[in-house]
Length: 227
Image (cartoon, rainbow, N blue to C red; front, side, top):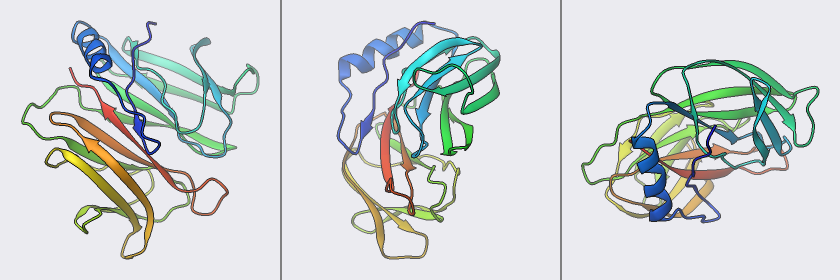
């Protein structure tokens, strides 16, 4: 499988470049395959190697990081995930089905030893109406339902429970600060500053980490490519 570039903007401010975006977009527009990429969303798991049908696909994927996008023919796949450098006793063994002409993020969720692979689809087609659109995915296993608000107090999403994927909400292009609060609370659990939202671009905000354990609640914001 050929690796594709993946652009990620996280709270440590890793920005994609327009040239990388265009290279991947041009490649994907010429393909009829589906695409998958992986996210290590398990805060107490080590960096991992990921095998698809016994073939090493992703190596040394740490917590909070995405793999590249990979083209994948439609069909059934066995995914086995091991601590990096190992290939016996997987910490996750799952069977998945990839439908034709789809884009799917596969998130490693939960805490070891109770891990699961959670499929998060991306819309395939672009919408050229001038605004960026965002959605929110709650992947913190011990966090309560949360709200996502703008720093000025405007509520974007409310009562988002664990593993819920919101619809997209479209905002004017610009730079925003988002706050995550427990639903019904005015206390901010996490602030996500300086998130630049570009026109005609889709984004997902992932809430990760824990409210109880040593790995704190955090967020990753990723731009998603469209054909």
